[in-house]
Length: 126
Image (cartoon, rainbow, N blue to C red; front, top):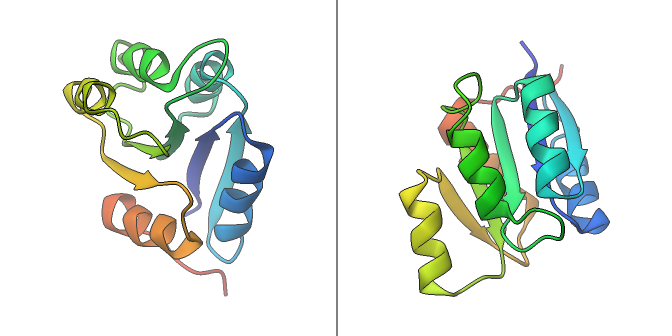
């Protein structure tokens, strides 16, 4: 069964890294470039996991996470913050919204794979 992964990040490079990282696995990777697009994509695609930046234009990752948690169809979706953020107040706000984990930027693809496998399981393509 293919896992659905959504990346929400204003950096095209980060979105590409996530897509390439999961290419060897049974995954469908979709992407959005800001929080508003990301919430729409999450509602449309019902991903199994979301990787999201905190600092983005239009709608921040924290605002998007709050909307996701308030929307019953996607409220339980694990959300992992991909961030260079170190502000304790912002990270505390993410914790209050039940973030599933953090991966600090810059990151390695294997960090994404390990956390994804732990949270939702992954299988390699044959």
